[in-house]
Amino acid sequence: MPRAGLNRAAVVEAAATLVDEEGAGEELSLARLAEHLGVRKPSLYNHVSGIGDLRRELALAGLRELGRSLSRAALGRGGEEGLFALAEAYRSFVKERPGLYEATVRSYRLYAPNDPGLGAAEGETLEPVLAVLDSLGLREEEAIHAARGLRSVAHGFATLEKAGGFGMDVDQDESFRRLVCAFVDGLSGRPPSGI
Image (cartoon, rainbow, N blue to C red; front, side, top):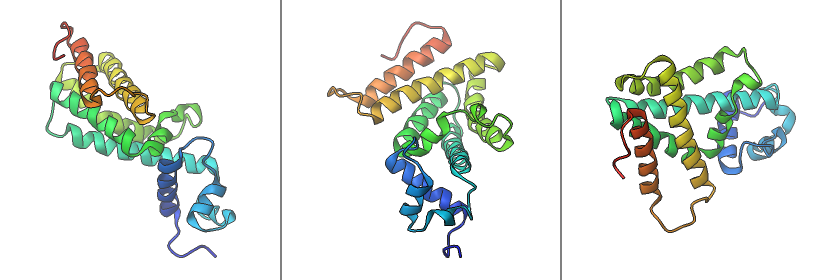
């Protein structure tokens, strides 16, 4: 008999908490999740069909949460102000939800290319970014290039930061600001400024 209060949503939320604490890589297992929840592993199969299903749900949860964070950051903002807000929201999400973020990095196209739920969630995550880029006059292919660049800037900095990759006693916020300034200047085609 399933544990009272344990359902698919509770299992996914517990897994999200666990991966934020321990990572979403190979260390994530149904056995470890069952231990974390205080249940036997077979009881998890009442809620998820296996580790692949759980990873899919984590990717969905992560994409949705990241999408909400980016939407809040972009709300009422456009242009360069919007880009800075998006970059900071992305960075904050990586730092605050590292395991859940990790679950979103590996594209669903590699393991479930026809999954409409993951495709829709990824699209919703991209919407606020494309809206801000549109306010800068970037559309279609140019907007996709810029969105990839912004994601790469924020991802690279935040993952290095989270891993302790910036050991020097220099303000990391200022380093990030300068990096985003250089990216924004590159998009505008003007010489670097704001540094």
